[in-house]
Image (cartoon, rainbow, N blue to C red):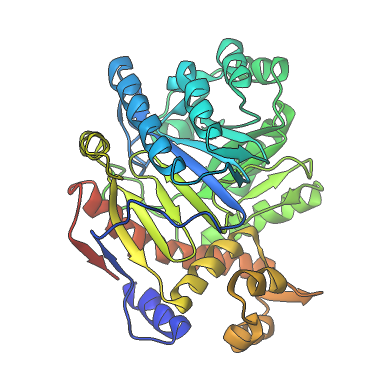
Length: 417
C-alpha cells in the first residue's frame, strides 16, 4: 500500500525528498498574510468512546473539560496577540470529541477568538445525537453558532449496533432542529459498512432531509489500525458501487454537491472544516496549515496544558514545505471540493498550474477523471471515486501512522514518510 503514496509523492514533488515531520516548531506563526484563513478548535471530550472513531478524545468530566477550556483560551490569545489588528478569517469550526459538552463555555471561547479575528462565513459545531435538544441548540445559537453537524452515522439500528452506538429518537431530533433552525443543519453518515446497500443509504438520505437537515455528509468507513474497531473494510468494487450510487441518487434528487462526500438541498447550506487553503488549529491534536508549514498539536491533554503553562505553543510535529510539497497539499485538499480553479492556484503560488502540473491534468482529462471548463477542472463520477480511493491510501499510509504514534508519544522526535 505504502509504495502507492511514496511513488506518487516522488513524482508530484519531482523529488526523492520525504515528507519529514520534526519536533521543531515556531512560537510565532506567520499567518498575517495568509488569505482565506479558517480556524478549527478541538474539544476532545466524549461521554462514551466510539470504537470506530480515530480522533483525539477522552472520557468527559466537567472539571477536566472546564480546565481544558481555560488552557484553550490561553492558546488562542498566545497566537492571536501576535497580530496588531484583527485578522479576517472565513470560518470557525468546533470539532471533537463532542464540542456540545462545553456548550456553556462556547461564548467565552468565541469571545477570545473574536478578540483577534473577524469571522466572515459563520461558526460551525459538531453534535452527538444525544445533545440535540431544544435547550442545547438555543445555547449554541445564543453563543453565535450558525451551522451544526449531527453525527448520525445511520438511522438504522442494525448499523448503529455494529458501530457500538445507542439508538436515538429521530422524531425528537427533528422537532428540536425545526424549532431552533440554523443556517446549515447537516447530518453525518458512514458508508461502506458491512452488509450496507445503496437502498440503506438512500433511506438515510431521505430521512435526513425529511427530518429538517438541509445538508448531509456521507463519509467512508476507514479501518484505522489503532482503533478498537473490529469491522472489516469493504472491497473496492463494492465501495465504488455505493459511492456512485449515492452521487447519482443525490443528483437525481437535485441536490448540490459541494465536496466529495457532501450534498445539500440549498446552495447556501455548506459545512466543511476541510476545504480551506490555510487554517489555524487550536486545542490538542488540532492542525495548522500555512503557506510555509503544516503543524499538529500534541494529542495529550496533560502535555498540552504543560506547554501552555510554559507560555509555549503545544506543537508536537511540524513539516516545513518545499514549494512542490505545498502545492501537493493545496491540490489534494482543494480537490476535496471536487474542483480545482486554475486562477486560484496561480494567485496562491504566483506560478501557472499548467506549467507545474500540465501533464498530470492532461492525463486526468484523457483518463476521464476530470473535465475542464473556463479554467476549472471538475471531477467526474469516476474521478471522485478514484480521489476517494487514493485518499484512503493516503489516510492509511500517512495519517494512520502519524496518529498511531502521537497517541502514544506526546512529542515524537520525528516521523518520515
